[in-house]
Amino acid sequence: MSNKLASWIAEHQIAEVECIVPDMNGVQRGKVLPAAKFLSGFKDGTLRIPSSVFSVTVTGEYPADVGHIIPVFDPDLVMAPDPETICEAPGYKTRTAFVIADVLTGDGNPVNIAPRMILKRVLQLYEEKGWKPVIAPEVEFYLVSRNTDPDIPLVPPTGRSGRPETASQPYGLEALTEFEEIIEHLYENCEQAGLDIDTMIHESGAAQLEVNFLHGDPLRLADEVLLFKRIVRQVALEHDVYATFLAKPMSDQPGSAMHIHQSVLDAATGKNIFSMANGRDSAAFRSYVGGLVRLLPQIAPMFAPNVNSFRRMRPDSDAPINVQWGSDNRSCGLRVPVSNARNRRVENRLPGADANPYLAIASSLVAGYIGMVERMQPPKQMEGNAYHRARTLPRSLEVALDRFAHCRPVKALLGEEFFELFAAIKDTELLHYHSVISSWEREHLLLRV
Image 1 (cartoon, helix red, strand yellow):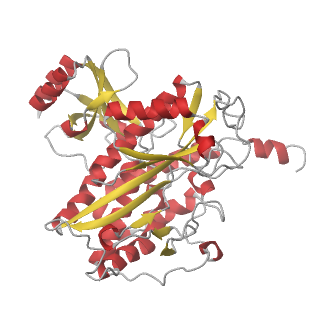
Image 2: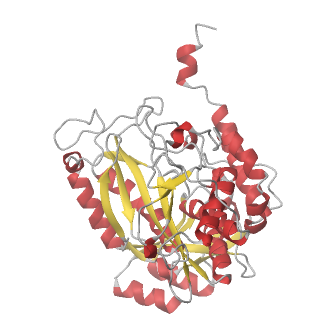
């Protein structure tokens, strides 16, 4: 493996390497090293990072009472770069590479609480059954004007015409070309990094864009989404705007999602097991959907991990409020696109763009896996407006975490320690959030109560 990395680095004349470890929130942490130092560290196992990297919150704090999972003396973990992930890092003056690393304990065992390892564990479950899941993410994000004051609401940026968008322009081509320079720059950088992105469209929100990824291996695509977010934010800054993957960045605009199309193949034959020979839905497909319906509302923090995530899930807002499922029905949390037998799939519309891609993908795949193994049956398909049905998704992160703690089927597969640590991180973030007095409270309560 080290020889493969050394050959690639030499071929691309790389001077520096960013060794990336995704944390629980999908934040990229790690180290930047000269290429020679990186290679020697990889070879002799001295690429290290503190184990607390997996307990840090999005606010930079650490939860209490998790010392039995992350020891208080914070021992080092060994970074094990995955050679399949190395790619050129666009936009740097010095020739730089990104590489994503797994982490190992001092005795060489995988760290099972790591988000990338959680997804690998789910993929191993499929492999043991002779199944091969295939996914295709669709990631939405906003371009917004620079904003250095968190008390001031975000606003759309000025486009090429010199005017910001003031009305919804879904699929608008002229609206898309308002940001042509940014989009072209983004495609160039993604191509340089080897990211396999497909189409880009203008979504419903003002200066809201969506990028579709080509379908493929879930781990590879989770890696690509992680790096894509980094590249988009860097490109936006070069054009004097921000790019945000916040699930609901503006109160008067739709939220941003990370829809996940998914199907399952027979690993031996490559056949899509979601379809029968006559093209109809298979029993495996219905059980997969049954697992999504039953379990996704119980593990929402894995795909809606922040307080803001639940602001997106509102009626008639292009975001689901339940896990109804239906054919070509975008009001449902689970949509079955029109397709032939070979391409039969289900689109999970629940995850927000703010989710850790490893955990969001793992949550969907593990729910579908349990559904197939236990031969769960889905409810009747939704044929009308799913917003007219009862809400089955949690309304807040507090409620979601309570359900999460009691989801035994998923906990049994992903591990008690992962569940406990993830919940502790989110509880700590909630405590921080609730300590902040909002502008709404000052506006409506200051002089009236």
